[in-house]
Figure: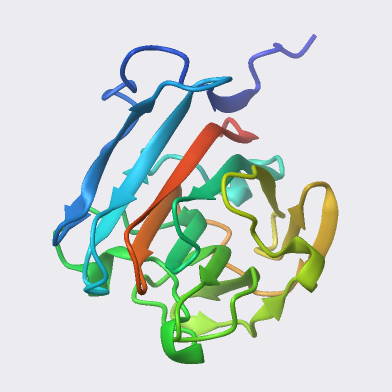
Length: 229
């Protein structure tokens, strides 16, 4: 009989006084503030940027230990809300390059500031939002596989973020590297081909960059699951 521990799972609900530094690193750039527990209903961890220089970054980064080809599929889910101002750039998803420097150009796995997809990491996939003057202020889903980008897929306007209102972001990555993206349980793009290299180890990431004002990103929980190879 197969063991019930055949899957690798992470679920962090951020209920304590501090986040678990054994699970998360918190690289920042410029005047970005390292994520910290924010005391509110359900418990959240908050990423904060403090001015409108468009060079400040706050990141919450897990370990690079999950891959779709291990059996699964690989599932990522995070419940997040933008606070203070919607003039932000946000990434919520998975990447194969663990952000760890203080350079905003290399640490944002995917971003669309200026309306153009920018993917400094060789393999990454997730949701992006550009709320300042640099692009369409809608959630978009995309990926990059071995430095080859997918198209951007925009969510309908009804999914646009509302300040301090939580949304649930879910990504399902299949063994062939295709992926499906959901917001609040509704499909944004399903079976996106070549979204990521299936055999590449990935880590969960939430990032925020100011794009016209100071602001924060609150994360209620992060869940990751994949097969145990």
